[in-house]
Image (cartoon, rainbow, N blue to C red; front, side, top):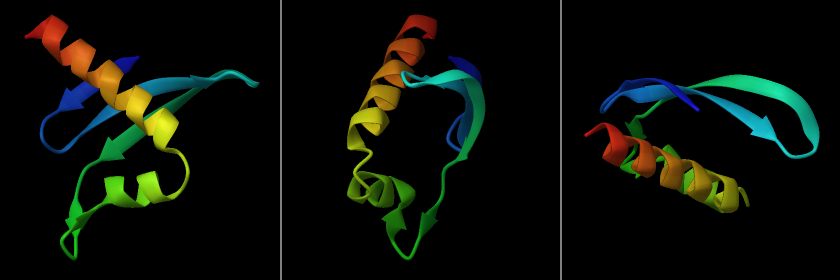
Length: 66
């Protein structure tokens, strides 16, 4: 669930995992280094499923609050 959005700098959200109890509070600060976004590293890490789900939820949230 999104707690705070500060476009285009980042967001704060809570996250839960299917196989782990409880929630974590995540702070994401968006930046670019050497012409590459951190997103590229996440996708290369094998976590693309979770990353894609997070982006989809952010899209839904932004559309609902627009």
